[in-house]
Length: 216
View 1 (spheres, one colour):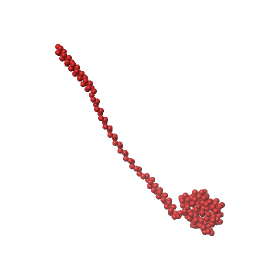
View 2: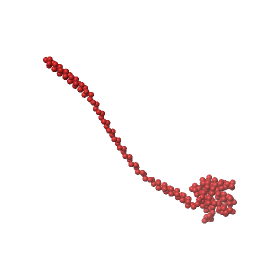
View 3: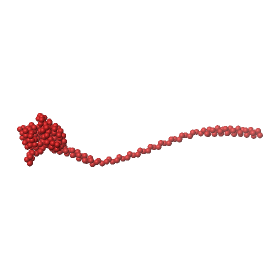
View 4: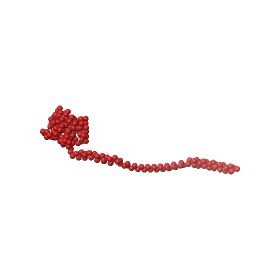
């Protein structure tokens, strides 16, 4: 009986030791090693950029371009017309030619020049400059062209005052201005040379009358 009891006691001690060993082994198992961190996912590739749209076709040139070339030719035509006159002078500009052809309150350009002459006779030494300034003011023509008119009046006053003083429109005055004077000075010819504008004032018309001209 003692032997059995002693044997049971030994087995109990062994069993208790074995349980103790199991508890220690169990505690160690609970502390398992940490899992390795998962690898990061690879970044997604960037999307490719969309292709640029093709540029629209350029519009066709407007028909006005061709018209522009024609306009340039037109300007050249005006210059050609001026060249066709075959002369140079102070009154060949567009403004001067328009002034010579215009009609004024006093009448045509000849009437304007005559009225200016009558108003400038108070100082015979300044007739040319006075008439020139007067004609330019009345018609708007250039100073150079106005000087041609002033020169014509000066020529008339110097050589034909007696023939033209009482009646500037008379045949006797016209003849004197055309060179029938002591100095043989043709005032109309001098005007044409200065202005570049031809005048038929000294050419008798077919009907025998006195022809009108730019400087009558």
